[in-house]
Figure 1 (cartoon, rainbow, N blue to C red):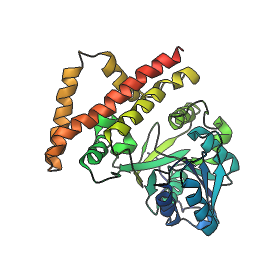
Figure 2: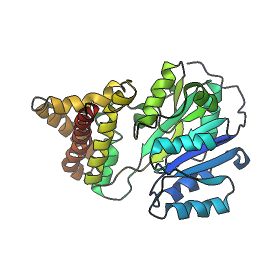
Figure 3: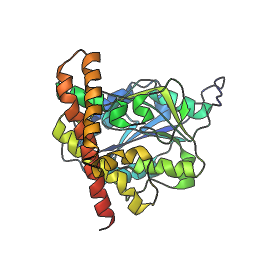
Length: 321
């Protein structure tokens, strides 16, 4: 892979866009991690785009914006993520645009490394490793984290599994984009309530753009912490793995359809699935020295795969409605 490691980092104006709706438990932590960044604040603007929050999110964001002039609150009356992203892009001033998630925290060199690698590799989009952390100190929450960090749980998702060195990929978590990318291929597709980032990156690659994964760009993500919420979250993910086919005719990568094939081939696939699930559950229980994981991990894997697969079936139905 070509690199220009001797090139000096050029400080450019950076716009950070954070979609937010009812995130009072996390938005403060997210903003704190941005305030602690080592990138110059006079080169940074933070646009938190709120989707008509009904909790204390707006109050928290306003308090931060009053204390820090580079943090601004914008409104997203249409509530959903793609609208928030596009509102942010249209109101941003930076040469570089970084999408951040309100459910995440970021290492203090996150912005500087994103900009550095964007310049060094002449990439169009750069992202890094997403380390999944438990919201609560429960065995279920820990099992969910392990599912989202395991190849059996997430397939070939590089930003979850990590890599030893930078590599070109099809998508990344969040994303640090050159502004010119949006001038070239347009904004996020507002028909996609979810999967808009994956569709955008597929569109970017189709237009000749380059997406770079760099393992030492680190963020921390906090997933759902109980099986019920995790299951329904995966149902929604499964739906929106299929619905892009209705709106944009661009399929996602094959790994997004494996849970669908699993559900469609029941009962033939159930026994091999159980054996594989027990194998990985045993490995986790041994490696973490916690026998409880042997009993809990199969439930967490099932919530991931069955929820995603059922959601995908519902997505197929909705395509034909």
